[in-house]
Length: 392
Image 1: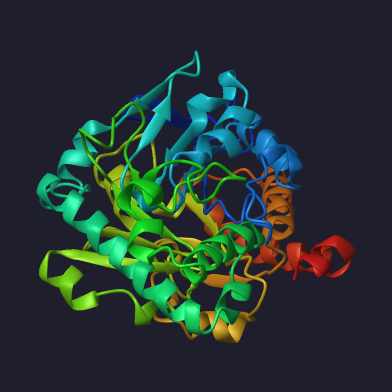
Image 2 (image 1 turned 30 degrees about the vertical axis):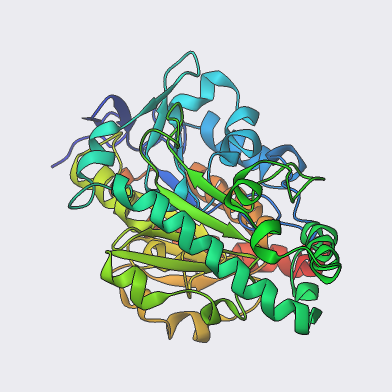
C-alpha cells in the first residue's frame, strides 16, 4: 500500500497497537504469550512459589513492556499469578498485561492505575454454557475429589513410597495423615471435606488447601462461579488410577494431570480458548501472527499455544525433532525447541527485542521475519550459560 509502517496504527478493543518502530517502541503491537510455572518463574521441588523478581525473565519482561510489547500469561494455576507476576509489574506497565488464570477460564486486564478488570462476557460466552462449572456440579465434584484422595491414602497405607514422588511440601503433612491413620483414626475422618478444603488443616506449613475451588477475582467460590477444582498431592505418574474419567465425561468435565495435582475443568476448556476469544473479539490488538508463545509442556497443557502461533519450548527435555512430531506443532506457525526453562524465556525475549530494534516491519509480519534468527541466537546464548544448563 506504500504506507509507512512506522506510522500505521490500529485500534482493537481499548488498547492501541502501533506497528513498526514508532513512538510505541520496538515491540509495539507484538505479544509474548507465556505459561507461568517453569516458563516465567521456577517451580522448585519445595513446592513454594517464587515471585518474578527471582527469575532471570524479570528484567527482560519489563524491557519488553517498556518497548511497547504486550504480555499475556496463560496459566493452569489459580490466583497466585497475581502474587508471583502481576504484583511485580509496575502499575504503569500493566496496561500491556493480560492474565488468564485457572487454565484460561478467566481473562483479566488492567487500567492505568493498575486496577484489574475481568472480561465477564468471556466467562459467560467463551464456551457453550460458559467457561466455569455448572453451579449444581461443584459440590458433587468436591465430594468426588475427596473420594479420590481417600482411595489414594488407602493405597499409601500399604505402600507409602509414592509420597516420595511429590514435591517436598507434601512429604511431612501426608506422612502425618498416614501416621494418624496407623494409630487408628479413620481416613474418612482425617480426610473430611472440611479438613481438605480448610487452609492449613492438612498443609499446615504452607497454609494451603488440598482441594480448592478456584473462582475469578472478587468472586466467592462458595457462592459464585467456580472455574476449576484442583486436587493437590496426586502425582501425575499415578493419577489415572484415581481419576473417575467416565464420571467426569458424563457430566461434561475433564481432568488435567499436573506433576503434583489434578485439575478438574469443563470439557473444551484449555489455554487456547481465551486466546481464540481475544483474537476473534479483537481485544487489545491481539493477533496470532503478532505473538510468540513460550511454554514448558507442549505435549500437554501448552499444546494449544503451539497449535496457534510461533512457539518456543523451554521444556527441560526435548529437541526440535521431538517437538515437531507433536500433533499440536502441525499448525500454521513453526515451533522450535530451546530448553532452559525460565532462562530460555529470558534469553529469547532479549533476542527478540534485539532483532526488532534492527528491523522496520509491520507488526503482522515481524515475528515471522525474525523467528528463526531469534531462536538460533537464543540457543547459542543458552549453550554458553551454565545456569541455563543447570536448570535442565
